[in-house]
Image (cartoon, rainbow, N blue to C red; front, side):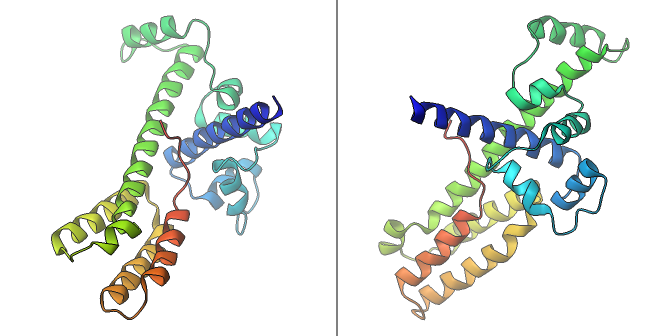
Length: 213
């Protein structure tokens, strides 16, 4: 029972982190800019706090949760639990009927933002899956049988770069360039397969964990 509670808590933290990350990215803010917006003071050197929230290591306090919800234009309850209003279906229908013609109520606006946020989260999950799928190109079992194929390799590289560009994940560029260089060293027999695999593991660990849905 204790293990189930722990797993449930970890799942809730992870899903909260996804919502926080989606709000930050939609707002076009870096982690340091985001924490500055929340706390009202310089965010330099404090990106780790936001990263811990987004990766589900811990959660913001009540004051910060309220501010994040304001930034995302959603209720605090939806931010923390993912639960919607009981009449969410009616709200969505009302939004569709009124959108572009009549002013929306605050609850209708929240319903609209919640739906949009869910869409953003699904997109992030898909993009992260694409990154991990492309990273599988470098798996040990494939490399042991591998005949160098420039088209296949350039395709994998292109998928990485396209997803990095789409998500503005510039922090992945340096470890990815290092991975490519190590791969070339492996092909040139300058390093062993085991040494190269360490670089693969390092790169894959820099990609955020995602739900296996």
